[in-house]
Image (cartoon, rainbow, N blue to C red; front, side):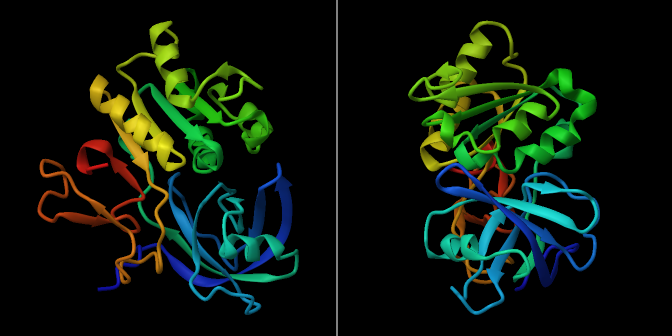
Length: 272
């Protein structure tokens, strides 16, 4: 069964700009054919070049920035053939796009103290999230970690966004010395963040597994934005299964599809 999001649309978008972020990432700025309306942070798009450069299967990319009109952008790390092809495109080229897809961060947490925990390019969904929480900026924190300062992509944008930003680098080149989860633990221990806050995480698998283990041990309310390989983004190909928790919201089935039930999941709803 095709499970295309009710507000999603397939079409063509014009590349208006590309800019590098460090040595291995870039921002792709697009002009849509029409606005997509109000957009909850944490949703994603499926992107592929229209010039036949391939690959045929589109790539799932988190939405980085959206102005509410026809301008939308994506922060993309160059990892394989698909992202290399997207990185080679230039202004004037077009991409095929299906957007917006999936479920984003829950709206029910907007009035609570909230902490975003990001690793590297996992920062992408949080720029929109921070801006949407501008009225709650005093209760909004972002812990942004990476191996080194040059992998804190688009740092200027996050420094200018609402909320409190804490940087962490494994090599100590900027901010807290250590990973993002260790930085969270320190922030709580020193009283700058409450353990009663809700915590959201997005980033590479080691960060998410470390975060999930800590969140379960500390019994905090936590959500994960999973970066899972997908083939279609609409629930057809079954390429993005995530095991469900026997006591969670999806307990009636052993697997959930990251593309339609996620990519944002309450930690207690999945086995991760």
